[in-house]
Image (cartoon, helix red, strand yellow):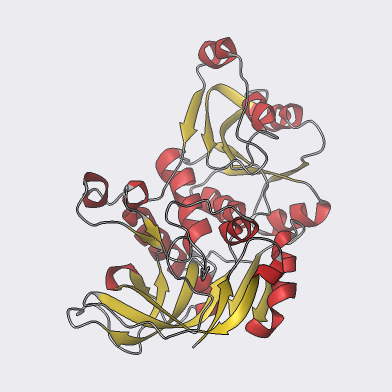
Length: 342
């Protein structure tokens, strides 16, 4: 089969189309013919190097967010059949540790991630455990489904399970046109919240407005004042922030007394400083939202497939468009996901 194989660290030239053996299913696996695989930020970071996930090695086939058709099943598989349309949860645990038994595969010490430290979806076929292949209903296209797994599950956990966003909450979403924020805006609105979208360009804010955001703020200007004006002087109930150091203080400043800052990323830096007195006197809750659970993934899919939510796709590219695809993925000017189709 053809696959996009990374053989070195660097720019797009570190990845090339190669012929590799087709995967064979283990007893509990299915083999999926890939219809589409979405470009993920981890793909770009690990292409540049070094590998970020334990167990990453070269050569490597990236691609975490996958949808396609089942073409083969292992001898013990009864839950899926050849021809099924599926979308893949990319997290694979050992299945027997306390975290896995609790549905928290992302915290398993032996974690494998399809496309992260195990062969992924930038290939014509991929083998995955059958339990991670979730049915896609006929009314949802496979390209659309491939845009869901990582950002929507991450947003689900941050918005609902950790952030506990509910009716009439005011929620500030940083980097509002990123894939995870596109999901978070819609999930917060679905919960009945009012959403303040913060982004770096007018184009990105326009996209957030189209998703239902109630207040649009440029991130290159102060935001705490407008947020307090919007909330009658109270401040935001929740801030969802996966940007990190660059937005840390502004996110804290937006919060009401007793507000919740949900942190789930560090793309602009990992180290921050804070006033302990500012946090405890104001009763702020600083909440980390890490690996989503198996339940998060299933509930996210059920909610999305029920209708009323949408993904944004910036581009669809084939293997022959390899370098332009990765070049566009490196740019933070994109609004929506890049989908690679074998």
